Image 1 (cartoon, helix red, strand yellow):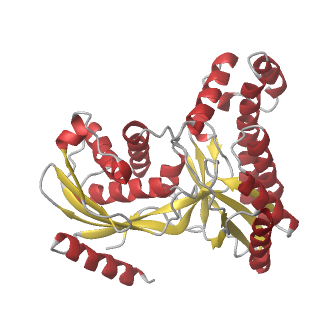
Image 2 (cartoon, helix red, strand yellow):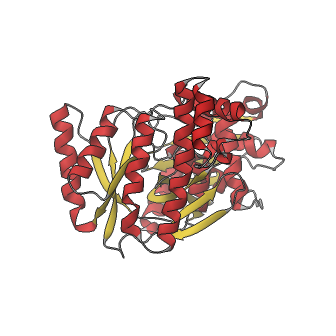
Length: 389
């Protein structure tokens, strides 16, 4: 659908819901993480790129101190005011994400306008493609522009993360929001989560005759249930035992001695740390290859990342492992789970002409295993949050 068609359709829906035209329409994308999983909350490195799938928000200034939000995928309008933000009687369900954005902006001292917001999305929910970050960042961008605020993009990402961490209650790192705000078309975002320094690294897969195949396994993907928080706590414990601020500060050369110390605490703590340290190194290796234009050579790094996530970080599930194994057997140059794990998606780097064959091989493997059929699409590095009209 063209931009004009998207704007027109959502504007018409907005008029029906809120009896008037919106002041504007904004979008923010989901993301795929090429490599660098569970490194962001360890002050490490990651390399996401934005998807063409995005959350779209039509918005209009409303009554001061009141916000009305409606998602086209949910029944009814959710309305909240200052009392739901400031007294602890917080908004729940999906509306906690836009409410958390308002809360985070106000907590940072910004004058947030009351608003009516109508939300649509084609980011697959529950697939590990950061639909929640896309929702937060699209709402934040809309409120930012409606209020005439002047917040640098990197700070917008931090505020969106603040909303998810401290209002919604999901202890995510900064990667998802940074990707949704900062990514550029045709590039991956090399992000140093400690310093906040971000570099746009060329990632023109089509020019190299390649494609990134995204396979949504449709396995349940729930991260607020404690597993994600448990992995983060284990990493923080490992850093404390090693006497460093974060696992970012442990190099591959330091790893044997570090693991020997951590094994005394528990083999699990050692495995968690080994994943983070080696994953940071893999990100740096992939960035170096992309800078040199050697896109085909990154495949083995992706596959090694998956093995580490499976064996050391233990965040894969049978559907993810089956998808990776089937993609590799069908000729993928590399494959790995992407996102937080426990369900969600796999990415595979494939020759562009082989994308359909690899997707078909994964579907057949799922059928043999008795899993629900997966969905697959090729992903093009796309732009971050911006205003459509």
